[in-house]
Image 1: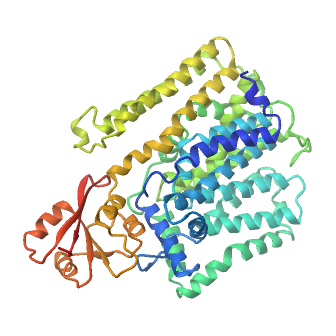
Image 2: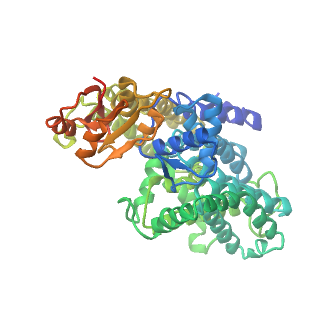
Length: 581
């Protein structure tokens, strides 16, 4: 029975059915359940709504101002989702979820090409059940799109490397052009660096220095550049200056918005983003490292023979770059270049954010998947205590998450929390037991030397943990997020008559624009607030309760507080004040 999941499975249809089911459960289930997360989701989703309503699909705006943060591809896809499913959270996140689902399938196909069908399937399941990809899938920003298009570009490169022709060059140009439309220069610069480093390793850079490369460049220009040219013309260069100089060059050269970090920043992000599968990362890197080198000096020959992947060749036995080396060895080197380029580039860059290294999720999942598949088949003999330690770590992660939920929900209280609790989250602490149950069942199979059973039990437990947490635990926080409840309580979503929406000290909640479906006037001082509440048309002012208490002392114009709600981000209450008595 344990082997059945791998045998379903010797065909793409079975693998695709399993991966699509698992991915849909993690990425699509209750996708619109959680209200928008500020700041990024609020701004991106609102910019797309404005684009839909204005009919201007070239220049992105937010709150009446040019938005220079992101290119247009995400906005266009969100507009399409709005047309199909309405303007809501599900539609805003749907492009990211679909992109993540397609990335899982690409991971499978790449694993099948590099190693074997079972490795591809296992890597796809690992990838889908990582916080790194699942989080991106349920978040309305361009990262999942960029990740998908980056993986697609590198997959096309590998798939056509054995026999590069005009279609191969054009396809890479198209995919990299779309990646640039998703998030900018990183969509072409870093995949090109990966490809260049890999070809340099084999001294085959001439593959890229080919007259047919002009076809790739032409395809890239036709896909990626027209929108940039149009938006530059429409904004007289303002968008191009803001996007390329501030949000690309300046982020690389200086720390923006206090998003800095040490050289350990991204290794720690990778470990957390792949938990609990990251407990197998040291083993995956160890065996993968040996597998990408040829037989070494006699001093290391014994270690190499025990660790290196010397299994049979892939479906296509034709050597890709070097007849003297196996295709499998080339695959390990390709993954090494992929991970190395992204880690080095973003470690050197001054501004650091966890989502920047999402494109290395696929090669990392492939390395972990390949190690576990080899271990399952008995091709590597990992000491029993190491696997026991890894399983114990999975149970410990579950326990820590359970304790964290108790702490977050206020079931246990400590002074360092400063009363910043989120009631309701403590009930999710029981989910911390799920990995422990899976580890218990896996441990028993480990004692019986049933490696396949270990993997099946572990994967089942991880999915049983992540699916409810992703689909419903995040929605538990809705009662503590202010924008949508305040708009609903105050009746501030009014499209059929003239009203004004304003706020004071609330710049950090751009999702107000999404839920009010209007621009929001930001007031910088109390006199402007007073004048705002004296408008002849109905107004709604969103203001921190403590600020309103001080303002109200000297305010005599008729008004009333029409809504009040706790704000998770700053741990205080927000009120909505209207000039309608």
